[in-house]
Image (tube, rainbow, N blue to C red; front, side):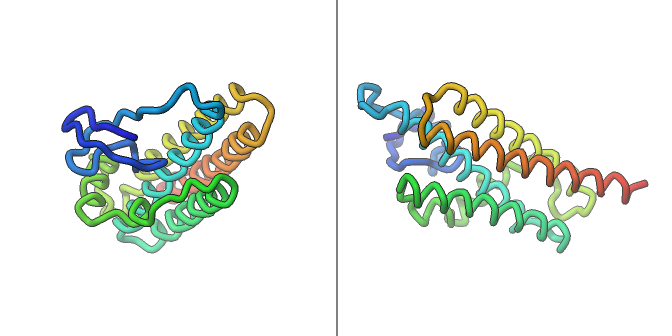
Length: 188
């Protein structure tokens, strides 16, 4: 169960896009049963699903806004990679993500796009560098979150999943760094 800190609307779901309210874009606060026997395992899986859902939506919205085929191609590869991870998490942990989380209504897409890409003109070809830098920062943060989670969890499937996700995000970091390097070379 989630509650918006701004409008106090209640929401349910295993993960909520960017942890934001669907009505007012306020920050959501999650209420959990800390006494559940598997609370730590559930928390780790929820963190993994939340991070991958946020990354998927970032790339999907960026891809949908991009105006140049080369931008769209890179963003499509990253979007597909995140969707693959979400599918793997679905198969292993069965969080049952609602389709509405992956295909947001237009008003939610617009609100999220405005917040995520503030200051980046996605129709401008030169803005691809800014977009990649924003994506790189997100991937590094997610990678570091998974590394920290893996270090905190006891040996088991959840620890292994977090370590694997950190490794996949390291691959995304490398891809984005390579793309930024090619952009820098092309500019010279």
